[in-house]
Length: 331
Ligand code: KG4
Ligand code: ZN
Picture 1 (tube, rainbow, N blue to C red):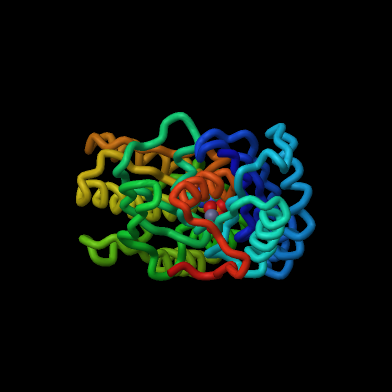
Picture 2 (picture 1 turned 90 degrees about the vertical axis):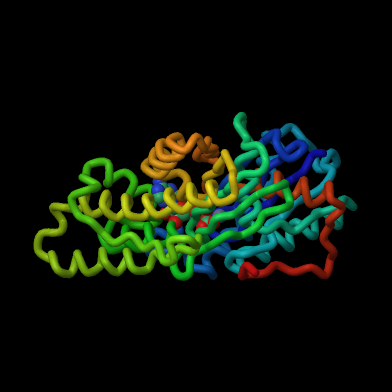
């Protein structure tokens, strides 16, 4: 089944052609980073306008790169939510119109389920059941995945998402937006043990997260060392990153042990973080748990993961209706 995936939930306009939920024929992502950079974060109104400009060329490019004509598509899978509703509506309405005019089925996909399915796009997918640690700019959660459509939430952040904490700390250190990649880079020159920031485990036996405390701790450190913190940016970045990575790693491994899973999938934009990839792999190996991580291009927002998840919806007979609408919040 040839599926055209479309994603526009935040600041990436993306389209992809994927066969049978796993074989990626093309994956095109147009980033709006340059547009939002000057504002230090995503400006929703600008995001919607940029999606409108990009959606047709990005889709055409995905079809061209896949050597597929519109008439050869079997179905469309489009992100329905959660995300910025104005941004979502661009892709969702476009997908709806395409499917209607082509007379083929289409389905609205949950963005978070899309991220979970990003781990099936390459060579080493995990067998079921597995634990998915989803860490992105908008969400942070742990899921028990027993089948393609059976994704049970075990815990999630009660305040900031992990990526959001990275972005906010980057802004405090004047490293720019988006901050995850910058912190990752700068931290390589720092000592992760030099400045110890708090680890928030909340309830040790539960799987919820909280990242607002560590963000405030970094803010306090900067305020207290106003005159010379610039000299220690590497240590601050490394210390902050280490605290976030430690909590994420510990909770994911605890979840695997609780559910008796031997596999963990690390997905979402923050899954690109080099320290998180390394530490989760090392720590999991001590428990004989295998870690599966998509390559960088499938960690951040993309449409191949939406097509991959949509394939299973369609196989289960789930199709969208013309009256369906995008939604901004999960749950
Ligand atoms: O999944 P994603 O592209 O969008 C959402 O669904 O939110 O994730 C974007 C997030 C941003 O917060 C960005 O700073 C973070 O992923 N990120 C990273 C790294 N690369 C991107 N965080 C830490 N280390 C990285 N290398
Ligand atoms: Zn995302």
